[in-house]
Structure formats: C-alpha cells, structure tokens
Image (tube, rainbow, N blue to C red):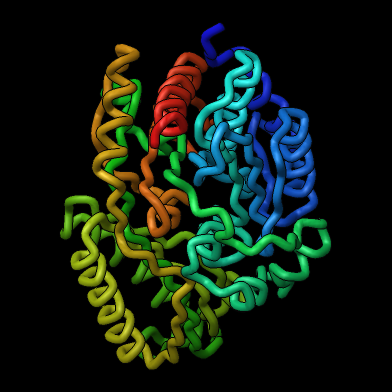
Amino acid sequence: MAPTIDGVRLLKALDELAQVGATEGGGCARLALSDEDKAGRDLVVGWMRALGLKVGVDAIGNVIGVRAGREDLPPVMTGSHIDTVRTGGRYDGNYGVLAGLEVVRALNAAKMTTRRPIAVAFFTNEEGARFQPDMMGSLVYAGGLGLNEAYAAADSEGIAVGDELRRIGYLGTVRPGAIRPHAFLELHIEQGPILDEEKIRIGVVESVQGISWTEYTVGGVSNHAGTTPMRLRRDAGYLAASVTVFVRRLAREMGGHQVATVGTLSLRPNLINVVPNLAVFTVDLRNTDDALLKEAETRLAAHVREVAREERLAVESRSLARFEPVAFDAGLVDRVEHHARGLSLSTRRMPSGAGHDAQMMQRLCPTAMIFVPSVAGLSHNVREHTEPADLVAGAEVLFNLVLELAESG
C-alpha cells in the first residue's frame, strides 16, 4: 500500500485545533504560554502520542515528536508553531505542524518505516506577540539565545517566560538542540498576496528577510492643549507621529524589499486636551539585504535624534529583536521545486517577508520552506484563509520531500 496524504483528515485536524482559543469571525487567539496555548499544546501532544511518536519537551517548551526509523540516524524534522497573535487565523504556524502529523499518519496507515527517523516539532513563542524576541523557542534551540535570558523575558504585565512555562506544565527537561536534524522543512501559508495574485500554487522560499524591532520611549512635558503655543511644546506624541510618517516615506524611497511599520503606540496621559508627556512605540524594519536594513536603521535613528532635539525631548531606545537575512540551503530549495513540479503544481521562487522558525534552524542543518497561497494576502487576521485544495497540495509536496530525505543516506 503506497502512502498518501489524506486531505480530509488534515483539514479536520486544522478545524479541531482552530476551536482552541477560537475568536469571533473564525480566528484564533492563543498567545504564547497562555491557558489557550496550553490547551492547544495538550491537544497536539495527545495526537502525537496517539500516532506512536516519542514526545519530548525541552527546557524552553519546544515539543518534538519522533517516529523511529530503520536506522538510528539524525531525523528529518518538519514543523512550525501553534501560538498565535491576538487576532490570529487558523493556518499560520498550525498548518505546518499538522501537515507534519499528517505525513506520519500516512506512513502509519501504509505500515511503512523510513530509513531515517521523522520528527515533528512545534516551537515556543514564534510570534513574539506576548514575549520578545519572536522565534524564541527555535532561537534557543539553535543556540542563538541563552535559556536564562529567554526565561527572563517578560510580557506587558511583567510576567516572565520561565514562570509561565512552569505554570502551564511545559518547562521540560530536555536540552534545547539535543536533536540535530538531518534537514528541517517548514510548510507555511505565504501571509502575503503574491501567490494569490499570480495564481501560483507553491512558493519555493529561497530566503527570509532580516528583521529589526526597536522600542522607543519618549519623554516630554504635559501641558494644556489650548493655552500652550506650538513653539513652546515638548510633545512626545509629535515624535511618535513623525516617525510613523517617516518610516512609510523611507520604505517608499528605498524601494525593493524594504518595509517599515509602527505597530504599537501608547501615549500618556492619553487625554484629548493634554499635550502627551510620554510616548512608547515600536518600529519594525525588514529587508532581504542586511546592508540596506542597516541603512534604514541608521536613517531612522538620525530622524529620531533630529526631532527629539527640535522638540527638546528625552528618548530611550531598546532593541527587541535583530535578525540578519537568511538564505536557505540551495540544494533543498531545488528539491522543493522538483517535487512541486512533479505534482504538476505551478511554482514561484521568492523570499519570505515574515520571520519563521526555519530561519533559526538553518543555523543547524539544511533547511527549506514551502509556501501556499493566502487569499487576498491576509494573515494575522481572523479572515486569514487558504483554499483547501492548496492546503492539501502543499502537504503533498512536503510529504514527498520528507519521504525522499528520510530514505536518503
């Protein structure tokens, strides 16, 4: 009996996981290490064990289920994450994990044992929506972040990662990185509009953009909005607003793959008739070229200094995350394209605009990503959607490549 992906089974699993932390409009809210994340973890771990996988939880809460091979060799690993942003959809991250479990189900149904073991993983706090940096679990796994530093990262309420891992029961004992894979594959929705606009079935991901996250804290002076002349104001909100406009203009001027976003902004005292004395905001800069990303960072910093000087404001900044662009293994990228074309699926080579666990795993082993279309490019949105046929097609590409690698020497 030849092993095959069961699309209905995969879609059913996606629907079931989507009920955990379900939000109005069909979305999901499972912030990392929340009660909802624990419930999602428990569900997926239960599925792993039911499939006969040996499940391990490491010291940063990454979960890896291993299916034994005929030989005790480094495994082929696939996976992603199951935490979401607060306004998340049902496919981001979850699709890659559950497609990995469907690969195992197909092999189990066919009673087939591969030469190499196959591992399915989900990593802690990929989104970075609650704790920074993002891709935390895979970064620790790859040796790029120490456990103590990760444990100390706190959310907006001062709750630390280490405490939450312990509270939800996922502070494991396995050393992160204990399993060094033969190769790592991540199947993911594109989270952008390109494949959908061009009617392409499979994105062959060659690289991931570099990411720079910075938080700015700006101190000014509160004063009456009606009686304080503009020339005498020390308006923290003005600097925040100027940066919001500046980074949009910067991205347009630089062109190419440069993008820039002011994603969070809070003002104090946040009253309609009071000049703000405090602004806290974040800037997200991304580019596929690290030299250009550094140029964007330099120009942003110069703008902040200039406005702060003119407005007589005190500014503090701190880096929340900084990752250089990553190029995936060329040979593995070619194999993604080969298997997609073997299934008569149209392909497009492309970079990823979003960060992914795969960019961290590339530090340890040959790594590649497979994209499927996101309808209208929507993601981090409750209306995130990928057509069922595309979800199944991506899983078939993943299955064929995992099988090839798991039978390799």
